[in-house]
Amino acid sequence: MLIKGITDEDFVNYKVPSMYIATATCSFKCDKEYGSPICHNSELAKQPSIEVCEDDIVARYLSNPITKAIVFAGLEPMDQYQCILWVLAMLRSVDDDVVIYTGYNKDEIDYIIPLFQAYKNIIIKFGRYIPGQQPHFDPVLGVYLASDNQYAERIS
Image (cartoon, rainbow, N blue to C red; front, side, top):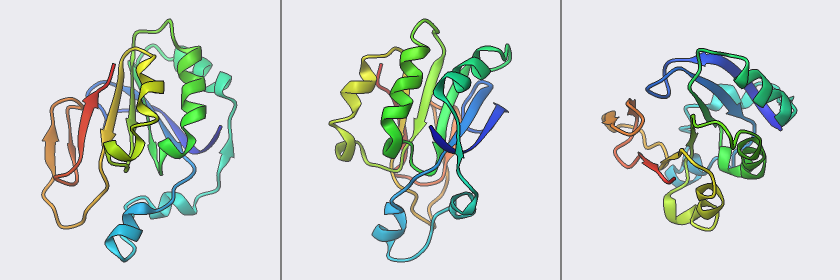
């Protein structure tokens, strides 16, 4: 799996301690839709990508007794959804939540969602970043999201 980085213990993106995986690809749909560069991950996009075996991600996650979830975010995880599904397949015996932060709207990836619903405890945060909006608290994630159109949904 191509990633930008891993944080073993993240306390910012979900309501429980989580492993945070910054994915490596993005079509920059937020910038394109807004008409100018607005990506709040633009610095991350400039970082070198790292090839990590999905088996190593799972082993690293399972060896940490503090983390209770995995968060895929960074650039655009749904552009690498096959890799995330591979990680889920290896974690199927674990009851922990898997959170996916996507900038896609739900209707844009409705063909992918059923693939994730085959696994338990999946949460997807939908919606692009729109500058100038007030952050709002998302009760599913237990954190503040940057734009009014963004929301999380437990899909399984």
